[in-house]
Every structure is written in C-alpha cells, then in structure tokens.
Image (tube, rainbow, N blue to C red):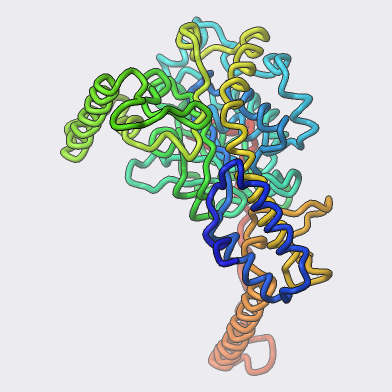
Length: 483
C-alpha cells in the first residue's frame, strides 16, 4: 500500500486497477480508522489537486466557453478554476453558476450578454484621447456584474457552488507583488471588481480599485484603495500560487493568448496527439526543422532576459512588457483552440451569435483529445478525496465542518486539507492565546484606572472613541473611487 503515497497519473490500462485498490482501502474493515486517516492524508498531500487555468487574450477568451462545455459534459470540470484578463470573465461565470445553470448558459445565445465593446469609434476614440483608455470602467462594471451574479464575493461564490475562483491581479505599482484573489486571500472582495482589474491592460482600461463588501452589504475600496491592472502582464497562469494555496500540482491550461497561440508548435507531440521518438526521428516537421525552431526561440528568450536585467527595454505606456514572453504559459495539459485570421481583426469586438457558436465548437474540439487523460487523473483524485473525507474522525467518519448548507462537500478548502484533530488543536491554541490576552488587557486596564485615580469605579475610565464608518463607494461611484 505504500506505493499509493506516490501516486502519479496512471496509464489507461491501470486506471481501473488503481480505482479498485482505493475503493478497497476505503471500504475495508481490516485497517483501523486512524490508520486510514493517516494514510489518506499522506496520499492526498502527495497526489495533489487539479485546477483549470483560463488564460487572457481579449475576445480570444471566448474559446474558453467551448473547453468548459466539453469538460462539463463529461463531468471532468475541476473545482479549482483560475482566470486572468478575459479568462477571468469566463471563470467568474463558471464559479458563480451550478452545473445545470452552466449547461443552459453555454450556448450561442450567450453572445447577447457580451456587450463590452458596443461603443462606436467616435465615442471610444475621444475617451482614449482624453484619458488614455479605450473603455470606461463604470460601463464595464455594469457588464461584468451579470457574469458574477451581481456584487457576489469570492466567499459567497464558493459557498453557493463549491467552486474555488482565483483571479490574478497585478498592482499598478511596478515594485509591489501580485495577488491571486480567492476566498482565502480576499474572501470579501467583489468578483466583478477583480475581473475588471485583471482586464485593465494599459491603453485599454485604466487601473481600477478593488472593491469589497461589508457585512451591511455596502461596497467600499479594498486594500486601502490601491489600484490594480491586468494579471497577464506578470502571471497569466498562476501555477505557483495555486500550488501554495490549494496544493495544486496538475493544471489544465486553456491557452488562447494571441501572441502565444500564433507561434506555438508542438514539435514533440502532446496529450492525445503523440509522436514516436526513436534516435532523433519522430519529430513533427523533421528533426532539423524542430531543432532550428527551438534554437531560435531559446536564443530570443535569452537575449530578452539579458535586456530586461540590464533595464534596456523601452517601457511603452509606463509598463514593462517583457513578462508577456518570459513567463510560463502552459501546464500539465495545455489546450490550444484553433483560431482564424478574422479573430485578430475582431480582437476588441463583441462576438455575434454565429461567431460564438464557432468558438464554442472549436473549444470543444480542441479539448476532446485530452479528455481521457484528464478523466484518468480526476477519477483517481476524486476517489482519494472520498477516502480522505470518510476517514475523518467525526460523526460517521464525516467531518461536519466541511459540509456546505446544500449537503455538498467543499472540496479544496482549508478544512478539507486539515484533519478535525488539527482544527481542534488550532482552536484550542487560539482560545488559550485569547484568554491570555484578555487577562493581560484586564490587568493593564486596572492599573491604568488606578493611575488615573479611578479605583474600582468608573470615573477614572477613559471614554473610548468610536471608529468612523468607512466611506461607501458603490459600483456607480467606481470612477470616484479611482480618482
């Protein structure tokens, strides 16, 4: 059984055997509940989780709808979804809707809801000349609010569907670190504001302020009103952050960036379309052609890194654009929907119903060759999660802390990673620390009262100042929050 601690994606011939082995370990009575808990905890930590990453790419991002529809029809849609720029808009739609709702929405008629680029050139050109941005942030906020079901936060989306939405944002300050918004790092952040920030490409949309929702339902600036912009500028595919937050080590990347999609060529084959490698043969395009292609790409990347380190690259619109080429754009499985030349002409235009139907179809076709590989991975992963849940110490082996209001298990959450014993020990430590801090505060307040001559009465107690309520910024006042 020790080999299960180092599970990898099994071949198709062994998938059924692995599934039967895990089911046996779940159902057997020959292993104690404690041994099962320890075993499945180690298996879950080593096997990791799967995430779907949607790249940016302006209107090319609508190819993601087809990829998601293909995964949804086979029940292979992961619970962890990340999106950047245009991909963030698609990820917001997926993370705030249930499977049944998505099946009704992912149709060509969805094009009637995509109206971000409806303004004529006479309108947006004057705005671009005056503000340096083609689109208006308030107008985009109204359009994005439908995709995110109004002013829904990351935590509310997670509680509604069980899916973990991640949106990559880059600070307007070039020296500040990026942020991956999700229900752990920014639970009260409003989704449409993160989508707007992740799509704020210089010259297209000015940096915007992230918004958060208070308990009273009011919207106020998040992160002290700092401004954020397009996540594709630094982290189009946030693989490291996903691994850090949710133990993700298997990524399904839907890559549609036009500057990457145009030059991509799978010389060594890919999942679903392999090639035979024997003594230098089996390369697509021939060995010499593939070798020349790799040499040119690596040499260009090398010199771009050198120029970036020496700070010799120009900064159009005050932005370092080198990371658009130097970052990682692929994953464990990378899906490249086939685009057409007209997509580059309509890169900032709303799709018609016929255009969206073609993009959904192409996205589905590009995902089908990878479906069996993804399915083998997810079937094993879900069985491991089942064993992890049922081996917990609690009522009937199920931890009530990880069951949502609708009865579904909140997979991928921090509660599903920690055992119930770990949670209880953390709560005990917190209670002990809180009680110690309370005793210290009471002793300090008593000494302070005596020093001011209050004694045991109330005369010496200093009145507390009430905290001022933060100023409210509604979606309609987003432009005011930006200024």
